Length: 401
Image (tube, rainbow, N blue to C red):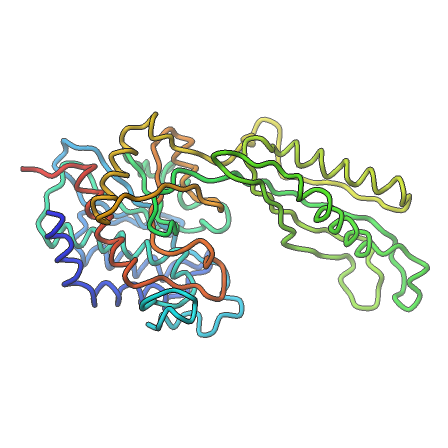
């Protein structure tokens, strides 16, 4: 059967690439996924999915119904993407030589190619392969093409909580370099608000420049805090990045009285929200000892009793035999023993894991190209992923007869 799947993928090579290109050519920034959802839903129907539903957020849920005796598998991929930034022709979806990005072979270029329309298109095409071959699965084959992943994951949450669209095993298609991902680090968000005193910019000595004070705190974070962030044997090293900064008043001829900057911290279980706040407050307190004018506050979105102490997850194959089965199936489809990894970024997989559902990741592309101007997916990896997804479904769901 694996040979039949491989043959069908190759026979549909042009069709599969064309579908991926259509998805990339359909812009879908977060909250603007409607047209991409329409393209996806129409292709699911054309590919023979038995049920295709679109919810209030634009999440597309497609199902190929099994005979009823097997386990179900759900493939999750997100429709939305980050802004294209300075990408050249971000929605061209052009085929080009990968040497421009330091990779071998032909690639499809465009915003969301690696994060993650390559995997999403492969999930739908895997359903087409199963239908075209007349394979009758025992359990259900499901695809959730979700909205709003890049801005918090409301789409996936809605499919779980409102539609009950879950399964016995979930496969997240975020880029894994064709390895099996078992989890990812958590995420902590914090703002540092620095107060100063405004004045006319022509006489800066009359005020206290909050932007200058913020810049000094940022320098201290980079020099003193980041080097001592903890490492973890499963999740890797905690990281911190300053990603946004703003001032008040936001005008060119006034020394700002307030400056706020945002901290994106990707943590492991050994570094909690409380630890981040404590470190930041301690750093600010030490600076105030030599600068009495410094006034700064650490602000987080956490509310007592509502936020998890750790927002990552890890699916241990020893605790979930179905994960080991899935890893073996991936290796069979690839023709070699696959490696396992943990993502450095976050995914919607956490929402399923928190509900107790086993979750793995597998997808074409490399993490290093996500959210960059070099966003692309290798054609060979994209086609190979179709084969892997179809074979995973056969092994996990079972095949009738």
